[in-house]
Image (cartoon, rainbow, N blue to C red; front, side, top):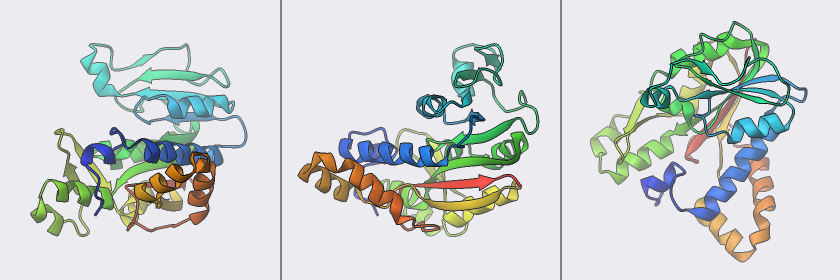
Amino acid sequence: MLPIPAEELNGSGTLGPYWTFYRAVAAEQLSRWLPSEPSTILDLSRGHGRWSAQAARGGHRVIEMIDFRKTVEDGQSPLRDTGQSPLRDAGKTRRVRADDLRFLPDGSVDAVMAEDRSMSLELMAESVVADITRVLRPGGRALICVDSLVLGMAILAEQNYWAHLRQTTGEVMLVPWPDGSITRCFSCGQLRELLTDAGLEVEWVRPRTVLSPSTVDHVLASDPRALNWLVRTELEAHPDDDDTVGIHLVASARRP
């Protein structure tokens, strides 16, 4: 598998050069994916703000959902809009605390971002994706990032869960992490099925990155200015429906 500790594989470790490269690739992918005209965008990317900020800088109206579990821990109301209306003020972000999308009318947003592995942290992702389909207007698009089977098998192998590895073919793969959390990992086919079953038309599914951490480290150690070249190389690879590489998968889908 991948000779990298689990704490590095979820982006929270200290593998600096690779994650610098990874974030640059993700930012450029989002830049190319965002609507060309000012739009209303729902951000389900776990409340980190990076994706919302990028979309807002592009002139879009952004509704950023805050993790409901954090809301409950803070003792706050399950639904709290920190602004007047999540559907006003072009180029600004509204942060909304809610446990689901019932506060949004049908067909009320132009695009949905679910970055930062957010759908892998939703063990019942089918329900969330169905809600995403409902709130998208016809022709609206969703960008979804999930943990891949490559990542899941690496984590299981690191923890010596060999019996679990033998039982992963064709089934839902729930992976326990060393910190006690659980993530749901997908093959390209499973991610396509998740989206199409919810009524979305899949445009593409691909690994976020195919260049290995060792390759990235080697190139950047030789020339720190090579980051932009590495990003261009990655984005020109277009390895659609290849789930044999990459720790995360990214998909774009459209509501008919």
